[in-house]
Image 1 (cartoon, helix red, strand yellow):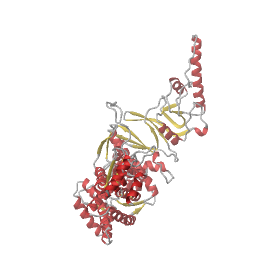
Image 2 (cartoon, one colour):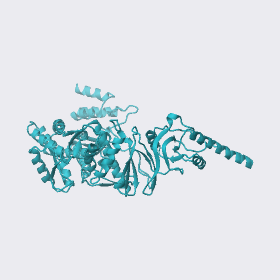
Image 3 (spheres, helix red, strand yellow):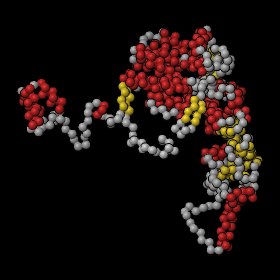
Image 4 (spheres, helix red, strand yellow):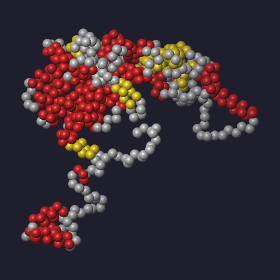
Length: 592
């Protein structure tokens, strides 16, 4: 019976090679039957249909050649943790008022000297997928609240480092994830209980200045007394009676020369170029904005004008002059005393602008042209025709002002409804001005965050230490293996005061011990003193605050990134698209 069954199978077209080998190895008679079947021309291999490719089994047969595959604890999980903690350590030394700056040269050879984590991570070309998850979390923090990116990166890196230690001791990743989730749920309740102040209004200049001091001091320590009043005044002028703030309404004009003490705030717009006319000052200006050039109309197609004699030449030029003069005369008859051009201004047009005593300013950026329209209430025209009454912009005072050796045009508004404010920054180098601009951007975003949530926390690492102390007590009373992850979560919170102490030149262990001692005694607002030789100080008395919304979102994004990275147990990377790069390319081209 077995022999007849084997001969039937061998003669069947759908006969697999593996089945043939198993049957043949079980009996010598069946081996003879299999060999006779091959002699009769019957194949024992898997048939291939049209369009099918003969592939091997498993992952190599599923993916293209050149893929990379990592799996398991050592190859995937620990590698991800090492990559994420490596990028976290790069940013951690820039945390706090005494944080160190980084000199970053991007792929276009542009130099950045900054301690802003968002800028550092943006310019670094991070290729590791796990590290990119941290970078994306920092970008989300920057887009949502504009501050706290270094906290996201540092806390997430420390959480992953603590998780790596738990994995080495034998805990499974799922147990660590459960413990972290349980600890974070308790942490949110503790964080809400740590609110020490809620602003009644953010429209008071002194209150807003004192609140922004710690935000600016963490970026530009020593310059907060100069920058904070400028930011507070600019935000209050831009908001007016409204409760919302558009970040784009706060502009920064960077001018080389002078020092930061020479910086100022102007309610209006500052154009970083002088006027093109001899008129330098206009009060109660009526402004016409043109997005095109101020010149004679030209044909869209190429054309040839045949001039036979001198009279025709004079007639042709006179007709062009008459056309431009009639257009500018019609504009002047509408009461327009200032023109803003988005393109070039011809010599003939400039002549007639002088004749009718109209001030002219050229704007090269279409974005700046839109901001001027928003600041003055004007509507940009695309043809050199007189604007309608509702399309005319108005400005209280337009004048030329010299900042150092730079001639600028200032459009100053005294109207309460004006939304645009400009901070004029002065400095010795462009890198310094860029760093000041980033600090101002963080301060403006902090004001926007305060409009949404007015709750404040104690700064200087006081909140983190208090939450860590309560989480340690909670972990000790929690049964099961999750208690180890909860305690590690509490230890990870120490990264903020520990880093502040290390960056200030203090011994971190002494500072952490002193903080725990005072917090156990009930002093919940005690943080790390980064401005003097003392180890600790009362952040509430010194008015050093952190914004609740910024902290809460930073910890939430860091937690999500950590859980995402820990849940990855395999890394499968396909082969990069594209062929080999050509040799000897143009050295002036960038890689993108």
